[in-house]
Length: 192
Image 1: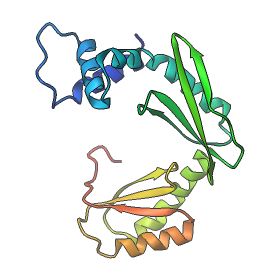
Image 2: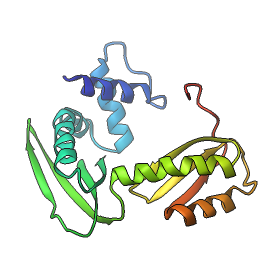
Image 3: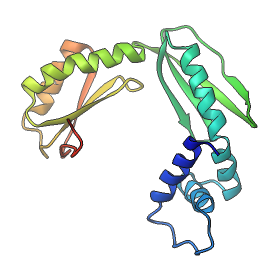
Image 4: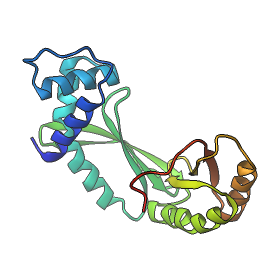
């Protein structure tokens, strides 16, 4: 198993607080499979197949990232209704659904076209808007860009509006994307 698969298994195993206590003889892999099955509503057999396919899917994602870098807005590995990859692309050029095979896994790749920005352009919007946002919105604890939604989310400590919605609308008008306020978000202990 690769490091990325082990990290996925460890993350799934740690996020299973609602699972019943596993027997002492259960391996970490069995715990991870059970957590994945519960999280995504699939059988343990299907969960095992999806976890095993993770290494191949990571390679496919890197290949897609390189192949479509000039238009890439986002790449997402989805679990519903089956395990597949969704690639968001800037511009109207349509790309049909593909299947990628190898490394013991075949995965469907769906393309969503028509996004107005590629990933780098959207990142520049987020970076450029941060300075302006800090001027007009007190208590910002962070920002995140969601290019697949065409949205920049501004995290603030406040639990009520305090004029933040108006400021978000001003930023949207200036930068041409939607700004949302996420309330009650404390500053990260690791924030620089």
